[in-house]
Length: 623
Image: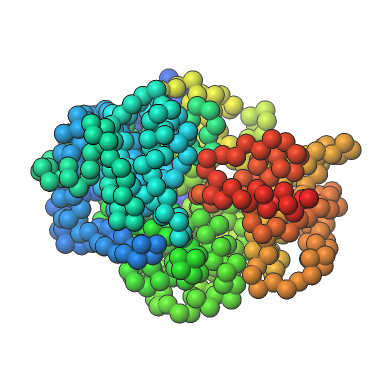
């Protein structure tokens, strides 16, 4: 605890000195002498006098440090039964040559490039190649609908789109080129396209519009990474679940690189040369930060996995990866581990693999409920760490300080604020809440390096979304509390609070109680309007595959548990047992959508939904 307090207070009291010291750990073209320049809006430009390039840091600097023959990227694809790996030397060659292809297509520093690719090495190569020449990439999750892609094209105004002939969802081949063509027909902006042809499906090419990836490489030669101002935009990442005009979070080269480098040891306890397996997608912030940029610039090997936690082929998928690549730390969303727990409640698959290399398991992306935490801890006999961050922060805001000395885990808490983040819990009037009092989780401005610098092309949106609610603070949109020892508990989005007869109750707390039942694999609690009490909670529960409990008995037991833990005030009297819940592809449960179904409203199905039939399953249950 003392080591944490020392580092945290150093970052609070002397942010300039603290972050310049962190910056010196990287290879700059021009080393910064100024840490931050605070702007009028309260955010800061980090290392404004420095020059750097994150592609250089992730590749060239690693080769200069003697890691040229170390594997940088392992590609593992159970859906195509293929594997590949790239050393730092090989990856730099691929990236530097593809950067030349981009230049041949007329892409210059500051131009935008949309990347619409599945989980294949070309996605990482395209990102690093854009960064190498100062182009700004915007990765759009592969498989997003044409309309969603079109609105992102019109917002980012890219010079080029990079896509593949197809992606693979489980056993289904999903052709990408028709989606891209349809998006281009709808968009008012008309960029050209580079297509990577996969053997599972060949795309039809249009002359003058489409360029073949492999063909273009035949005339390419490697290009060097260009020195860029630290504040130069690296990427635009649109927040998931947007409707209408999307919200493009912008990240820079310098501040992001410094923050990621710091986090690789501080949060994840890794050392250069170790293997990090982040089971996510490059379309999400987790993939940007901890599949591509973070591991490589820190000198780790990263696993890029094209598969699911279950059914590709079974619930042992993650454990096989750990064994095959000697993984030191694994990071995924709680929903992935809940899916594994549902298929393999006794952890039989865990016993089949040699997990001796694995030191720690990390979860983030949504609240890690204590039941999932306890299951994972008990069956793997490993430390399991929850940590909290967002697309907007780009790297963890709350975490266990493993790199300087792990502290005691409190189930349900993402532990302490990370150095650089001053976190407050504010009531609706902007006053600090007392210990254990729930409120809005906010971060005092300026934010540390690595966080969003603006919303692409829309400064007003930056203010209305994040800065206006509590002047002087970034409003995270999440609610929670801090206990007397400083542990932060994130209880879910602030709109996931139910007002029962004037009592504000957290759905997260109710879900925690339901999930603790031995037969429950996953659950969600949402509000239903009630004439008498304003709102009432309604629970939706998925059973474990092994469960044989009578449904009526389960409902009685769960309702009783809520009554005992929260009290009769919770008024949870309605529970539905469902086969699945609607989720985004990144694993977040779409509670708003469940509310709409429950209230017989028109259901606005977002493009981020993983399985649209899950809505019908809920409708059928309610019927």
